[in-house]
Amino acid sequence: MTSRPLLYDFPTSPFCAKVRAALNLQGVAFDSVDATSPRAWLRLRREADGKVPALWLDGRLVADSTTIALALHARDAAHPLLPASPREHGLCLALTTWCDDVLYPLGLQYNWLDPAHGPAVRRRFPQGPVGLLMWHFYRRRIARQLRAHGLGRKTPAQHRQELDRQLEVAVTLLADHPFLLGEQPWLCDLALFGQLRFLGFAPQARAALAARPVLGDYVARVKAAVGWRSAMRTPGR
Image 1 (tube, rainbow, N blue to C red):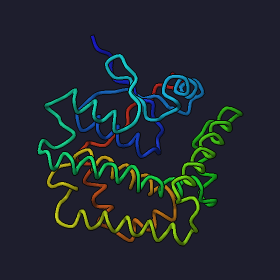
Image 2: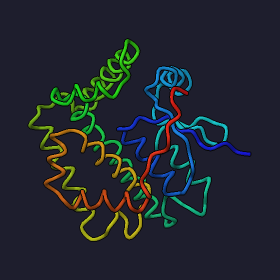
Image 3: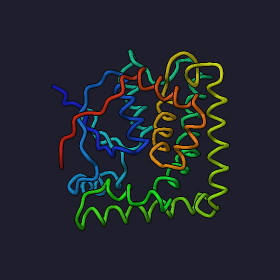
């Protein structure tokens, strides 16, 4: 008997949200474990280079949200996560990359490096020395990533200009259809949903989203389409 998939999850991660939405859309029952628990974090550092999400699927550990989604897509032909049309298949992957590579750095900037939001992020990690170590580890790594990306060298005013520009792209893409590629959600929608949800945790980015109600309506549609829910957590696994 095949065991249920086990997701190493971080509740606010847009990539974890993307994977949870994919599992929900396919109707896959799964368990999840808090990736910030010391035991889980140490195991991920050893087996998946610290990457979250990571999913135990059919006896192997798969890391990276798009890699996980592609594995789920290949596993269940009855519930595809990408369109069959070659053109739309390619567009779906390109839009997924836009979400992951362009919107995500903005979410990192506003969630992790905005001083006004820093205490809220710290509270998401366990109390005690291990939790503090984890928080410092991720914050340093994110600061390096954003500096290498270029966003970390820009001013707050430039961050807001970039955020507004990219949110307007999303509004334009959703002008004629309920989802990015038509009448049903695909992987690109799960990716965009995760990134918009992530941006919404940070006060400044949340205000930018609130000024564009079409995006709030879209997030609600994706939630309804995938039957949005989180799995019961298995503590400290």
